[in-house]
Length: 222
Image (tube, rainbow, N blue to C red; front, side):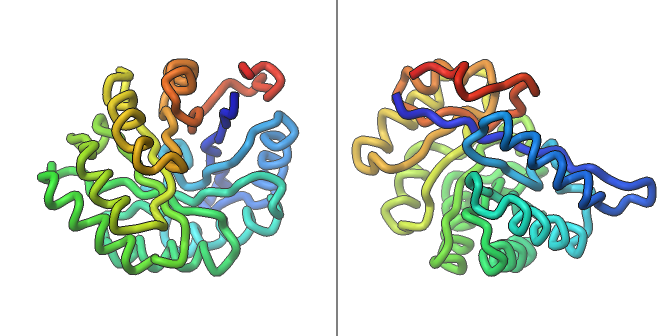
């Protein structure tokens, strides 16, 4: 069974609010030694929403250099400003990050057509780099519909995966059944640890979640 565990990393700050890069390097080593398949920085538990652009760039540069290809590195580039997403995603790609993951806009709920237009614009601007969609309805107020995802994949080969952070499993199961028929390479990850096993048994690819620190890959099924 081919399944992966990618862990979102916390961001460690100094007392003055800047990123503690030395502490982050030790943290990356700890995660890699634990056997994770990948590390996601600047996600929800990485507090992307509280960091200015320059601090994000410092962390990206540090992570790329220190992780050094030992595991996959994904960067969260979500922002309320679309052009900032594009700028930060391009920066991450130039520095050597493997992929970026992006939430749809939050605060105001969007229609399926608006979600598609949003990701269509971003994916077109970032056509030479790998992107993941991030579905987190508890934070955005709505779900990225399965048909919308399918439409986007038919237009953008650079959209490679989907993190589905929902308490239930029905939406993830629908996504796997619908999308993987046409795009078997598409990666579908659970966003909550509790859904990890169900995701894999349903044909998904694993989990992107903050698993306990005692995690070891040898404990995974398969």
